[in-house]
Length: 506
Length: 123
Image (cartoon, rainbow over all chains, first blue to last red; front, side, top):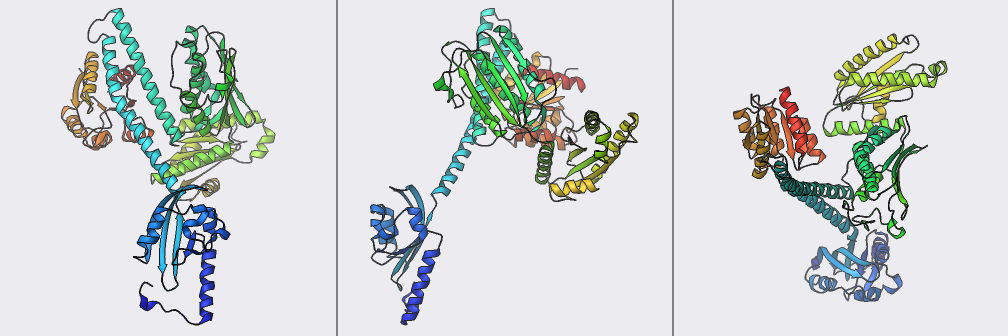
C-alpha cells in the first residue's frame, strides 16, 4: 500500500460508499482507541474507545485539528514529531511511545501505531494506553529491588554482627583472660545492644517480607491454649522483675486452630512484650476464648495507655507512643505492624482499645476451620508439593463402617474418645514428621508425602494391624468394623476429589 | 581423644573467633575458606564435625554439602550450617541434604556449643 502503483482508487460511487461504510464500521467497533485524521491533521473519525479512554467529547472532536482536542491537551510535542517529521517520511510507524500528562485524566503512557494511507487521504493512529501495565511492571520491579536490597543488607550486616558479638562474648566469658566487674559491665551493655540490633534486622526483614507478600505460612492444627500458655510462661521472669501480676484466663480443654504456630507465637510475644514495656504497676491479663466461628485472643494491661489521637496510628510502621517516661527498652516501632500483617495473613483481624492512664487492650480474632476445610488444604498442599518435586503422595482413608448405627449405640463422647485413641495410635505408627493424620467425623485420613502405591499398601497394612489389635484389646472388634482404602497422586487420580473418591472406594 | 572440627567460612575474622572459642572448649580446629577447600579438607583431614557457611565462593555451601554427601569418604560426616541466610528455602534445601543443625548468624554460641557436644558424644 505504500507504492503508488497499487493505489487503485475505485471510481464506482457504490464501491466508494461501501468502503466508507466498511471502514467506519471498523473504527466504530474496535476495542482499542483509534483515531483517523485527514492529511491536514484534522479528525475524520475516532473509535468509541478513544472517547472513553481520553475523556473527550465526540462533538468537539470531528473536524477539529488533533492538537486542539480536549482544550489543546493533545498538543503534545512528541505527537507533533510523529505527525510532522516521521510520518511524512515513512508511511508506517509502530511502537511509538508517548508519555503525557493530561489535564483531565492525568499522566498516561501510550504506544502509537501510525499508518499514512495516501490513496484514502487518511492517517490512522491506533493508541494503546499502557499506563496501568507500566505501573504494574514498575511496582513489581521496585518490589524486587526492595526485597533484594533488604536480604542483601541483612546478610551483609549479620556477618560482622556475628563476629563482633562473639569477640565481646569471648572476653566476657574470660576466654582471653580475667576481666574486672567494670569491664564486664561495659561489655555486657555492648553485647545487649548487639542483640538489639539483631532484633531490628529481623523485624525489618519480617515487615519487608510481609509487605512484599512473600511470607509463606506453615499452617498446621495447633492447640492455641498450650501455645499461649507456653508463650506467656517465657515472660514470667520479666514480670517478676517489674513486680507485675500475670493473669491467665485460658480454657482447660484444647482450643484447636489451624495456624502457623511460630508466627502466631511471635504475634502473641509482641503483644505481651509491648504490654510489659508500658506497664509499671498492676497486671497483664491474657485470655483466650473459643467462639462459634472464631478464636479470640486478648492481651490487656494496666499501663500508661495510648492517647485517642495516636490510637489510629498504632499499627502503622515506625510509630512509637507512650515514651513520656523516657527510660526503658526502646523498640523499632515495627512489632505491631508485623503482628497486624501476620494476623491478616491468617484471615483474622486485630483491634486496640485504650484509655490513657488506665491501660490498653489488644485483641485478635482468628477464623475457625472445619475439619473438612483443613483436610482439603492439607491435601492440596501435599498435591502441590508432589507436583513441584515430581514426586507422588498417598492418601489412606480409614472409615468406620455403619458409623450412624454406632452413634445410636455409643455416646458421642465415647465415640470421640475411640477416634482420638485411634488417631494417636496412627500417629505413633506413622512417625515421619511430614505426614499428616486428620480425624474426621466418621474416620481418619492419613496423607503420606513422597509415598507411592507400594509404600501406601505397606503403611495401610501396618495401620490395619495396629488398629485391629487396639480394637481387640478394647473389646470393640465385634462392634466396630474398619474399612481401609488408599489412592496415590498423580498415578491414580488427577485432583483432590478423584483422590478421595478412589481412596474411599478402594 | 581430641575431637577435630573443620570450620568453613569465607570470613576469616569469623573463623578466628570460632577457633578461639572451640579450642577453649577443648576441640581441635581446622579451617577452609571456600566450598572447594571444604570438600578437599573434608576428605584429607577427616574431621569429626564440619561447621559450614552457605554463601561462599567456589560453589557455595549447599554445593559443598551435596559433594560431601556424594563422596563415600565423607557422606556420613556430621555438618552444622552457620549462615547469615535465614530464609526457609535455604534451610529446607540444607535439611534435605542432611544437616545436624542450622544456625542463623549472629549465632547463639551457648546453643551451638551444646549442639556440638551432643553430636560429638554420639559419634
